Image 1: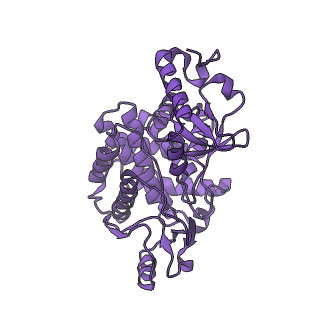
Image 2: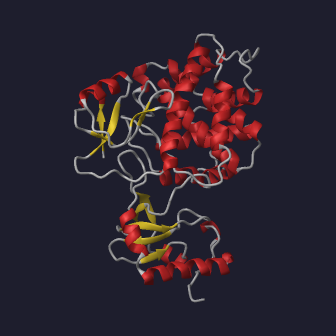
Image 3: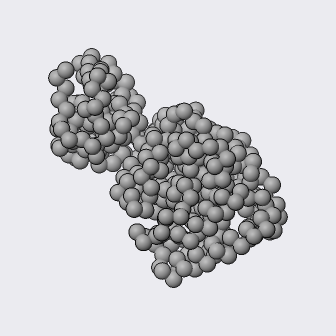
Amino acid sequence: MQFVESQEIKPGMRLAKPVYNRNGVLLFDRNTKLTRPNIVNLTNFGLIGIYILEPAEPLPPITAEEIEFERLQTLFMFRLRDSLVNISKGKMPTDLSSLAKDVVDYFGDLDHKVKFTQNIRSNTDFVYKHSVGVAIISSMIGHAMGLRENTLLSIVTAAFLYDFGYLYVPANIMQKGEDISEIENSTIAKYREKAFTLLHADTNPYSIPPDSLAMVTQMIKAGHSASEDTDRSKWLTGTNILFVADKFDRMTAMSLSRKPDSDITAIRYLMDHPQLYAENVVKALANSIHIMPVGCCVDLTNGDKGLVLHENDKDFNYPVVLSFTLNQVYDLSDPDVQKEIQIADTMRTMDNRIKTDEATLKQFTSDDNSNKMIRQVEAFKKRHPDKFPPASQKTSSTILTD
């Protein structure tokens, strides 16, 4: 799979990802072989580029939920754009509250983890895609924390608005991504503050929830380069959630200007900076998305590569992994194993999706001896849950002799 910019698209190329219109209607499905009329339509649609399959590359696996996730991202992005354009013109954002309700209804009541994926972002659509991404993540985090629906709606609404000012930032600054000077960062802050005045918080003509306005104010004041000196004592719970979701989305976002970080790298960064990112919020995020799903290919610290056979619900860092080189199973929740091997990072595809190896996974499940070991590991964990606490609480070795 590779990314091709719009001007480089040629007839015969096959789409690796579906393309939807502003209403969420499928225009071109995966594996579509492009024709000249198709390319004209894609160009008119305003895409900066597409992901294509190599000539002999098979269609990568993707679930129905992942397909729907991508469709909703596109649909929500266009709906948000319409509302923000209306606000910039002093008009009523008629779809803002209903959009927040739709995000919360879909992502704020899930009973399982999801694979969080993103589309490529350009300077022109960054604000909309980023805001939708933060809204989705925040909704899932809030649900995992047991927040009420009204609170989730306020948080999601704030997610749509706190970066509104980026729409007015000069293109030459936006093109730099996060590699900006202090002066440029100050310029961005001024545009964000100026955009906030368009919301008319004093009279609130758009009926934005008061808590949302308070969160937007706190996010603008904090900025994206907050330091340990940032005073969070008066932050609302929603602001802490937005701050975590914002950083995670920015780190894992795909653009032409930077290579995205993997989910595990982003989560580990957040965990390593508890003075900035609330620990309970980061934990809720880790409990909302798949970071080490079954079938995920990983790089190990011993230089080997492996395949995740079983997730660790208590700590994503320590799943059960099959080594490709030695064809050996490692239970990384075992402290003795951790001394020798840990996960360095996940292997990613070009579109930042976790690389999976279903063929190897199916082949593995036919190995009776290995299956027996997996069952032994799981049975032991169920009988002795006290021996498998989070990594930070482990004090003694666990030996599978029961």
